[in-house]
Image 1: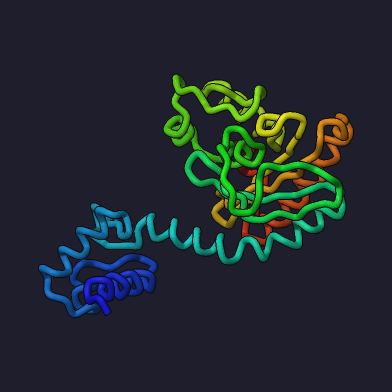
Image 2: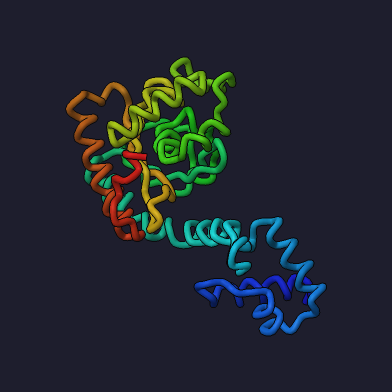
Length: 258
């Protein structure tokens, strides 16, 4: 074993067992490390956000990077098996293809799919990646982000890559669309990724009420009437809320007021 890696693992384990955090002296006692080595180790982990240190109390706690890694682990290993029955139920109820994706920077990555028997051409497949701004799934996930994060991802002056003639082309237009998404309760991809194909999508929240993923239903424009859109959205939201509650979200609609 690599000694430095072993020390990191031991330190993370010790911090994970303390709800109020630990002082340097407490860590020194539990880890039995020289002060200089422990200082260097903590400085490195604080700089990489694996550990945080409160300025007033001087207590060390697990940092945001550990939380992000834990959420990714939970999402990747547990989310899909839990979600698949919900996707399959939607496919059976609606007779249309249902997909699930997660957000990775300014892209989405497809992690699950339940295909209908109706012929439909999708450019997506499990494991594939598309720009978030050009998809219903992506817009449902982006609508859950705080404004400053959106600004970082999509500066006002930056032109967005089009995937079709209908793709949103600017950060300003995207933010307006996301506002409409929150007010509506679901996102719409009106041929913005694939001409002639509509997708309706809504996020799935976890226990911290942050979006873990989004689910969508895809339908050709020729089959989509206003009444059908309303029906698809209603069923999609109902299933997304049921899945969100199963994952610990007490208020699956909280993202609409973000």
